[in-house]
Image 1: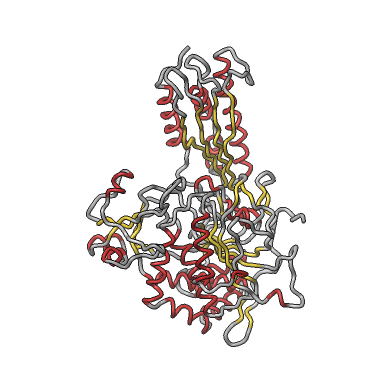
Image 2 (image 1 turned 90 degrees about the horizontal axis):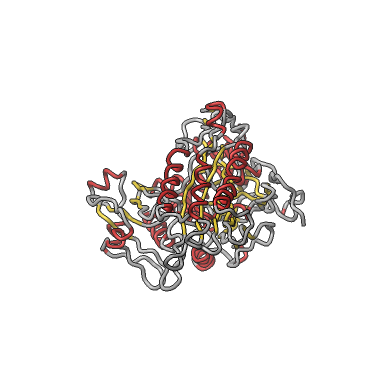
Length: 574
């Protein structure tokens, strides 16, 4: 029996239906710890926050960053970096520019750049993720600890604190094959509606200009884009513009400012006790599979464990939120292949549609147990097929992407065990319809194209060194009112360190008046107050130094708030 052309429409409809009904509105874990749990911050951390935040060296850094010249330099750097396309697993162009600037402009020696153009970190046991290199960009602020007679190390690695933001961006999905890959940064008045298509975006006449060195041209368009506003209403009333560029909100302002902070620490001779690594990490978005932090934490996807080969003792992410619970996920891209693609033979679209129909019947632990079970969801995110290679032939193959999520590894495994067999069941049903056995040369076969893993984690306690430092730095500087920790869950780079047992906390270093379209082709933002960036830099610096320890301007030493051997869930084998 010939499958009619509307099979593809059925597949698309089924995929959209599942996407609509299967994803929960929240990924919050209701059980532990209770909402609004206060952290118990040690007196030593309180004292350290006060001393570090008011240290003359730290205040000199903050004062310099508060100048108009520094604000302009940060803004220009962001614009120049964000225009470099950086799809997940293709971040080498952006990483290369960061590496270049670290040495030629930001004051670091080549020995202080801890990552290489080929993506290798020699000390890590995870230098390939999904068979691909990892293009992180990391620099070290050297501490004094390694010179201590009693210094402890793990396989030659002295303790370090990681501050990281990711450099990959969802759009474009692929680097262009030829020509100038740079992204055009478009400017649109608020009076005009947000663009609905890529063609509308491309047709906007106003855009920022860059010279042959990649430096932003400070013309009238630049002056318009550089105006600072309080919020969207203020921008609309004051002649502000939407600045369209992928990564405006997620998350190049934060990552770019992390390197501003690194250069400022170097310039002002900020000396920690433990080393501080500041990194632009790869692979947080899309099919990046958290490659950047998996390399840094030696995460083995088959074992689901992290060796922490660099001996990181605390992790500070720059995606914001102060989250302690992390939603895990399994993601499959499964291809249904019809080797001969005959018009009257087994149909790849039909096999995929059969699999989707079976997925639609799967009950999650949430469905079965209601509020007593952790939130567990799944979705068919994309279903697509190749066109026939010639008239009268069938579809050669179809690909199905399925995403399942939970904050608990056990329920995540339950939903995986329910969904994974449906792929083969769909293929088997289509083969049987044509009287074929699985494995037949003429039948539908399966190929796993990609498997994504974000490890789940639910905190047993809100008390750890990173949370204490992050909260108390905020309290000291007036950004936080009390040491309360919520229990909402996120899906971030921080999944990996948290699952590995390394204390983690998140901030942001960005300041935007308004923005929207994260992960969309029409992502946009409007410049926010530079003083907000400086206040956030002050907090991140204070928190990192609380954990790492700090050589204060008066000659005293604030000792690290955490021990020198990091946590891990797998021992490193050399």
